Length: 86
Length: 201
Image (cartoon, rainbow over all chains, first blue to last red):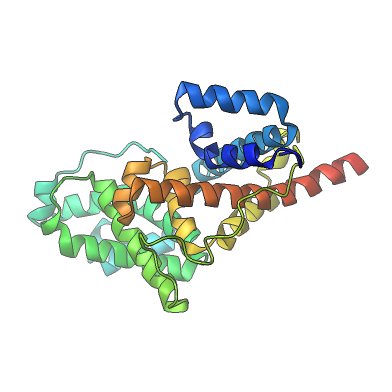
């Protein structure tokens, strides 16, 4: 994402999600990798985008269960009181 | 997020088997609550979304045709309930196929180019960092947020996300790209500061 070459950076941006998901064709991947080898800012954007997605994945994996009281009220409202585990 | 679920009999659910109902709630309430909480941003509304999702699911189980799997079907109900809850507070919000609205548009071009990936791993998921991650999600327009949550937090495919929300795959991809880039910008602001602090220490 240099000032001189915004058009390449912009078209790269459109494919960035597919690129980090690994769903782009080999040909397009090669084009992007070629651009990344010459454009430091795009390189940073790709790396930090990958990290962003991975942090959200991690934080979701670590997310806790439904709080006990919330679960209890849910079972009650669904008339499943007798299944509440204490 | 893929989780192992016990096998649940649709036939038993349709015939009103309470053991099976209880198994359904036990297995799927976690994922619906997580989605609701990140979608509506507060525990009270999230609990309402959770309850309404299962009330509707029980009410409409007879119409479940098994074309999608049970979790996609529940996500669809949960996502609709969450969007309805948000619409109560923001009646102008619409999730549709017709283009992106004003809140979803704006220039995608990044403005943050600091490489913060080099921070030590233990800096990334401190309780303060987790709060920053949650806050960034809340700053997304709802119509981008729901796509990001289903795809990147709950781990649905692009196709499943589209089916859940009634959006084309192209539309899901457009919204996902915008959501991810906005979150990257916001996390870049946050983690660049952490990086600066460390360098000053």
